[in-house]
Image (cartoon, rainbow, N blue to C red; front, side, top):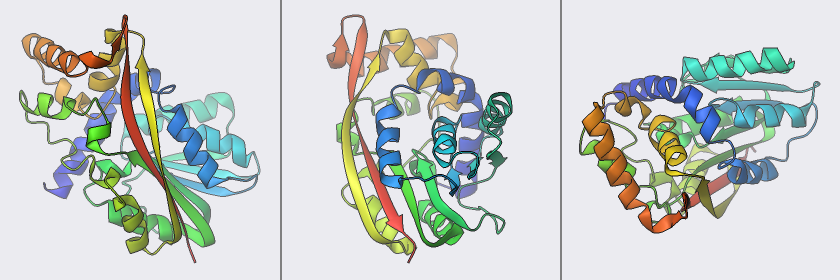
Length: 272
């Protein structure tokens, strides 16, 4: 797929998902974010760069860890996501947080001298994730570290049939290689190819919990990577997608809700 087109899909797709994403994903992503912070080991006073910051789940936890003496530069391709972060930083008094709209593969020369670089569930959306990792390495001080989390293997993410279901009714151009970085040691190899040393990975198995089918559909269709495609559904198409997706995860229904198996991979690498 053309990289320029893919970036445009991601930009406007996450603009469409921004408000819903913030409301429906925070708790279900807490486990992977906890693991990311454990591997990042942020300290007061450190400067942190974040790629694909979304609505700020990781941003503000990082800001609390580096405290007022530190700095967090949060970047995202979506202007709506950046606005959410800017608004919260201003409203809640996080003076150490700056948010800017930047493509993860084109960080620019201004972003340098960081102690840590973070990317939580962003690399798998990029047409050229290696370029983003190269940029993360460049921004770091010698001895700095980068930590990235991605979704794991497709077979371990029981919600994964959503992509072909959506593609069967509308051409979405979303994430053609979404699970590639989560396969085997692919993420570790990408870190090493970018020039990181002492690379370590952790594979995390968890469950995504939704109280009812409405919250599941909101998270997966309106607050996730297919949100832009969903804007093109008419009422009949929307009902068909919902019906087919609910059937694909029916084995994971628990009463009125769902507990859907999922997997993440987190990697940390260091700048020599």
